[in-house]
Length: 400
Ligand code: ADP
Image (cartoon, rainbow, N blue to C red; front, side, top):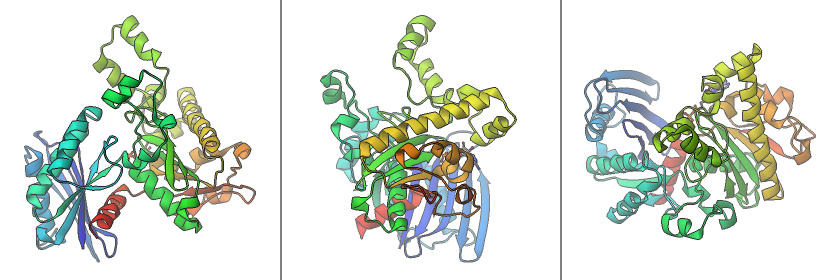
C-alpha cells in the first residue's frame, strides 16, 4: 500500500512516496520556484538497491503542472517506483492551520475544503497553498483519498487557560484569536516514539518535547496529550528561532509603529524574517554561529546565551505545568545534532531533576537514544523527528 505525502507551499511542492508495509520512502523530491523562470524539480528514487537522482529544469507555471510532472517522474521507467498512479491509495497533505475545527487527520471532501478556506485568515501564507495542493492532487490522484493532517491538531487538547489571550473576549469569540501552536505532527511523533522507547504507556507519560530546527517550539505533554506549547496564534511566538523573534513585549510593535513610522508589512518582515538568530548575528544557521561562538565572537556568544536561556525558562515553566516530568526530548536539526546546545540547555537543571551524561550526549550514535546521567530522575532523549512519516502513518490509520 502506497501513500504520497505532500507539503505544498506558495511556490513549491515537497513530496515523499511511502510504502506502508516497509515504512520505506520509495521516492522523494521537491518542485521549486513554481511560476518563475528558474523552476525545477529535484527527484530521488530509492527502491531496494536502485538509487537514482535527477534534476529537471523546465518552466512550471503552476501547481497543477508541477504535480503532473511529479507523477511523470513517479511513473518513469528509470526514475519511478510505480507503474500506475492508482497504486497510490491516499495522499496525505500537510496543512498548517486547522483552527478549532480540526483536531484529527481528516478525509477531505467539499465541506472540509470549505472549512479550510474559512480558516485561511489565520494562516494567509500557508493555508491557501495547502488547499491548492489538495485540489490539484484530488484531480490527478482521483482514485486516492485526500487526507489533511494539521500542524495545529495535536495542540487542540490544550486547556483554555493555556491557549486564551487576556484581551477582550470578543476577539476570541468572533475572530478565533488564541494560541493554536504548530509543529504538532513533530511533537506528536517524537512523544509517542519516546514513550515506546522507554516502554512507558503514553497515557501515563509526561514529557517536554523541544523541536529546534529553523523554526523552534516546545510542547508540554501530560498523559500523552499536549497541555501547552510555545508558539501561539502564528509560529512567531515562543522560542528564539532562525529568523523569528519568538516572545517579545507586545508594546515593541506599538513603539515601532508610532515612533519609527513602520507599517504592518515592515513590522511583519522585521519580526518574522530579520529577527531571531539572524537579527542578533546576521546569520540564521546555528552551525556558523557556533563556529563564531568558539572563536569568542561576542554577538554569537550573546545569541547562543539568549537562545538557550529561553529554552531553559520554558523547561522550568513546563515542569511546573506538568507537576511530574518523566522525560525531555530533543529533536530536529539542532536538537538532534548539537550536543553543545543540549548540554547548555540541561546545565544546572538539577532543580527539575535533569542531568546529562557527557559521554552519552557526545556519542556518535544516531537514531533514538537516551543521554541522561545516572543521577537524573528525568530521562533525556534525542529522537529524530519524521513529520512526513507521521503524516503517512496518520493517513494510513484513517483509511485502514
Ligand atoms: P527545518 O526547520 O527547516 O526543517 P532543520 O530541522 O533541518 O530545519 O534544522 C535546521 C537547523 O539545524 C539550522 O539552523 C542548522 O544550522 C541546524 N543544525 C543542523 N546540524 C547542526 C549541528 N550539527 N549543530 C548545530 N546546528 C545544526
